[in-house]
Length: 133
Image (cartoon, rainbow, N blue to C red; front, side, top):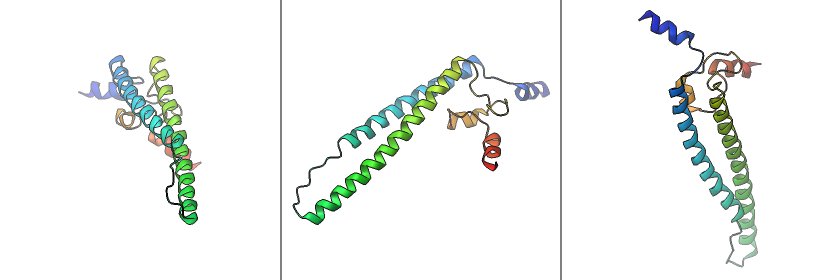
């Protein structure tokens, strides 16, 4: 039993089966993210709602709301694009068999963290240490 614990501690990369599991998770997340990005882009492009009320005050408020909504949707779309890029970078690390290895410490990122943040490149400890600097 002590041997299995030592093996887990000394483990420095994920197995082919584990990498395949992460790949499937990431591909699913990419598909969801690309769908969300498409919806955001449609919202940005289609935010030219016709205002049927002719009251100038209403039109001004409506136009202001549309601009704010368009800016927010553009900001969300940019974040979604970055998320997709980070996920695709994670797929490259899977192919290179470097996925799940902390770029700061060289230690294996816990599987639980990668299930939640599959594009993570650092352990929580490394991330916290980086923020303290």
